[in-house]
Image (tube, rainbow, N blue to C red; front, side, top):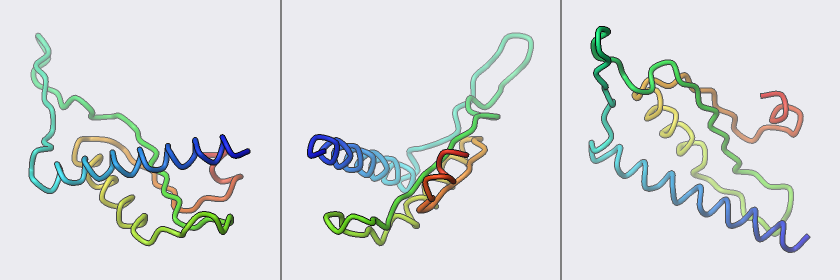
Length: 103
């Protein structure tokens, strides 16, 4: 049980770190659509038609975890950045177990 909590915390910290770096790059203008040249077809945007599921958890039932206030804004920023790259994005904020399993 303790190992599972540690793993979840590690994944959460790593996810937030990754999102933070991506948001900083997006705000600095370093993230731009990636176009590739395909012979006899012209240029296409690399991620056009790709799909992403962005899940944000900000409210925890376990009192050992502090609720996170900025998750909603982070999810929205990641959604916007992915959509700019051509992704079709679905977001889930604080999904129930059933909603998460059915997404």
